[in-house]
Image (tube, rainbow, N blue to C red; front, side, top):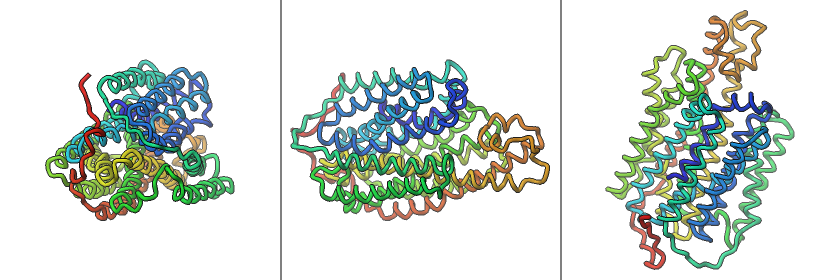
Length: 494
C-alpha cells in the first residue's frame, strides 16, 4: 500500500505546483514535460516490471522499483533547472510503473482469490484517495514549506516500504528457466513513447494534423503492429498474446482502458472548474474534492467486502460504469452559479462510481489467468488503464481548447478588451481571477461551457465501458486449484 501510494500520489500532486516551479526554475516552454515525462516512463515500463517479476520474483523487483522511485524523487527535489527536474520525473515514472503493478501482483500471490476482493478494496482506497489528495497536498506544500517537499516526502515513505517488505514479506524463490524479450521490450517502449509524444505535442508545439505529428503517430502504430507480430513468436513475451484469448481478460482490458479515460478526465478537469469558475485556491480545490474520496472509500471497501463474502464480482464494474456515466452527465450541467453543496454531491457520485472499478478489475483478471502469468496479467491492467488516462487527457484537452476558443470568440463585442491576452485567459488561473468583473464573468462563462462539453465527451466512452462490463463472464472467486505448498508465499509479522 505504501508503494502504490507513492506512485498514485505523484500522478496528481505536481500539477498545482507547476506555476511556482516555473517562476523559480524558468522554462515555461517545457512545462508540460514535467507531467509528460512521468506519464511516459510509467506507461512504457509497467508491462516490463510485471514480466521481470514473473521471472525473478516479486520482492526483489518490487524493492528495485521503490529504490528507482526514491532516486528519481531525490533528483527532482534537488533540481536546479527544468531539464534536471524533467529527468528526475522520468526516473520517478520508471519506478512508478513497477510500484503500481507489483503491489497488486504481490497481493495476488499472497492472498487466496476468495479473500482477495477485500484487500483489493483497500488498495482501491489508497489509489483513489491519493489521486484526489494529490492536488490538496501539492497546494499545501507549495504554499507552505515549498514545492521541493512534494518530492522529499517520498523518501520516508519509500524507506518505510523497503523496511516492511524486507522484514515482513517472505516470498518463495521459484526457479525457472527464463529469457527476457529485450527486443519486445524495446518495441513496446518505442510504440508507447511515440504515441504518447504525439498526444503530448499535437495541439501544442505542433498541430494535430502537422506532418511531424502524423509521422510520430504513424511510427507508433507501425511499431505496435511489429510488436504484436514479434510477441506471437517470442519465447518469453512481455505481454503474452494468449492472454487475449482469455474470455475474461479481453473485455476487462477494454473496460480498464475506458475507465482510465474517464477517471483521469475527471480528476484533471474538476480542479480546473473549481479554481477557474468557483475562484478557489489550489488548496481549497483539493479540499472541495474530498466528497469524491468519501465515495471511493465507500464503494471500494464495500465492494471488496461483498466480493469476499459472496465470491462474485460481475455487478460491480457494471454499477461503476453506470454511476460514473451519470455523474459525468450531472457534471456537464454545472454553471458559474452552481452552489458548492450541489457540486459536492456530483463529485461524490463520481467517486462512488469509480470505487466500484478501481481494483475490482485486478481481482477479476488475477482470478482468470494462470499463476505463471499473475505478474504480467496484473501489470497489463495497470498498463492499459494508464494508456487510457494518457489518451483521455489528450482528447479532453483538445476538446477543452477547441471549445474554449470558440466560446471566447462568440463573446459580445467589447466584452473582452483588446488589452486582455487570450493566452492568459486560457492558461493562467490567477490572470482570470484578476480580470475586471464584467470581463471575468464573460470569461468564466466561456470556461464553464467548455468544461461542460469536456464532461459530455466522456459519456460515449463510459457507454462502451458499460457494454464491456456486461461482456465480462463471471468465474466464482476461489475456484482455481491452490498452488502446491512449496510454492505458496507467506506473509510473516516482522
